[in-house]
Length: 288
Image (cartoon, rainbow, N blue to C red; front, side):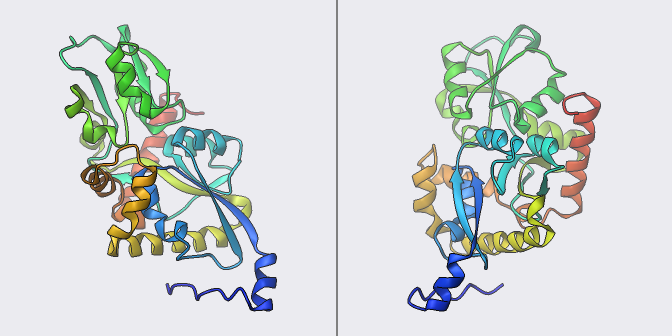
């Protein structure tokens, strides 16, 4: 796909076209992988003809809740949340957070004696997250799960408010230096159980926008990913602006884990993994 031509704001015809452009809300997280994937659009280097993209940046659980109420036109959401809104939203072919070696991890305080989950409080990053769904599948619903923002989970475990924490995003790369101990890698567990990549999140568009819109936006996002992968240094300042972790090495690990070939195209194994997680979640009564 070719880059869009430069816009001439002095041209009255161009200005007229811009005045009737449809505004579309595009909701993503501040996490490095989303900023990386959408960088070319955020930087104004790519556009979708006929549409004005209005970006909303919030944490993933807030976006999950917004998706449940149909608030945004295009949105990043946890795969577990998508299963609940799939009648209203269509998953895009590009932009998925899915792969190997990228799953949530369960942590405890360094030196703390392990205890059965059934006797413990487990901090999870939101009711609608795939992390909570995955922990429920792993632990069989054992324990008292406490929903909280993902960036508060390690602090809650450190302070003793929670016995275990289900950690996502940058936390998986920095937990050891903060003195936490790994109890289980839920991504590794899923991979051994199924032999498939782990579906964590996706980009979805409201079905009322039409299938043609979904296809066009997927192509635009794919082009954005390809361009940023060709020049990753260009996205670094923007990733640092939004990321919880500022260290360049951590940012690189994050992008390497969550932006991969599945981000460009789900493929057969990606679709198989999503169908399997949906079936297991429904069989366990975790979604209706």
